[in-house]
Image (cartoon, rainbow, N blue to C red; front, side):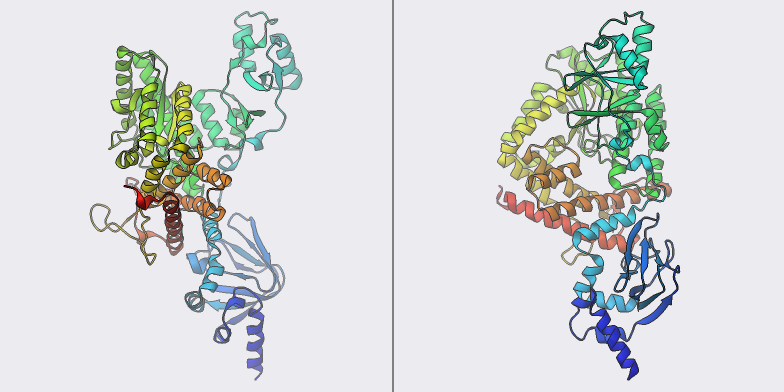
Length: 622
């Protein structure tokens, strides 16, 4: 009788806390008979990172503190708090630490009972798996608990600012500018034309352009400043800025918040953060004297990615690093081509396309590039650019970037055009779209300048942004292409794998997962006339404009991050094994955690595709 009373008390206790309060009447009776009770003295470590756990705990009395693998506080809880489900759902070992803050009694459920409840009662499973967005966000947090902090991968540029920018007007004399620098203890001054940043003058400029050149210090500082200096976004990541500064051999970088100047960072500021390998790799690439040296330096990139995976950097951060290293390779090879062929006869802009244009490049990427040439180019000039393209793309192959199988390269005369010809090409795509042509051309709507005169790219992209939102049939065809490729998941949420060929029994994580989200985001960006190329930025713009449901947008952003992370981790594992990295993942090599959340991510993508197809009526297109 006493036992029955005690079991009834436990049943009533559980019925007062989620998710047990959502179970049907009578369900708890059999469960409580299978529970045990354990006592933990204050300070006892109940769970620890790296240690296996196969039980669910529910605090009966007392309190516990839960921290992640790097010691960050996750939760504190008292009666009714449950923990341990993470390892039951995703597999061991634990990534969390749980310590008794007080003398604590806990009800303990074994793994079999937990699994039976999850199977029998979806509401129970959903509580521990959380809502869809929380599930994906939790997956990312678990995967990305950094053991090193990796400051340069996480720090935003504005976090480095300690003092307001020191500015002077255009008509201030060199002498006055030098006195201001000395008085304020800075190594650089920003020269303003009203509210607009007109230039920058550094202590190096005063030495080289004034003292060494014998200039009159009474002249206006505008005569010796660097006009229209390179700038960075204040909310950008520190490592991106450092890579840019290394590539361009500059030591001061003004930061902008919109159009407003908010400060200046220096290479010293950035190097204090962390001596990150990707930065040194980009620096080494920029110093190479020939293409063979560039190729040798670029060959270190897979090891850099492997290191970043070990640090649990996010997929977005790793994509930007791989992209930045690729940019450094391309810029150095372009500079070497000019050394060999001489300077370009007319202005041009070398643009990158696809994943690198989106700042999302992974390993195993081929090259996608094009040339925008000034309209003044004559036949001889065009022959120069033909040789130039052949030289650069050939050296890119040497550096580990294979030629595009579809011929989307500047070596193809079809993608090496004068600006007015590019305008005509995009106008035709936008005004008279042909489905097959749009599918092949979609990569050109992910375009970013790498070298040369960026104004050529700006003029072209500006025209596209203006025309695209009014090109209804083009957008419908583009949406049709975006929903055509299904994620590799079946009706009953099993993975769909290749049935034959070299990649038998694998799923293409890029084509049906990452690529599908990229395509969806591109449609929204073009429909809105948004200039962003990065997929996350495009989804954020769609959310801000209200054209995408807030929950679905958040889900998609988490989904592509998780899928991309699994891909990069797969590629890093291939590097460790001495195999070429690819996008083909074997489901049987994934943990139960990865399988569960990949299925969820693919389901999110498929649902978003259905919504997009309904909005654009893709099933009605001929």
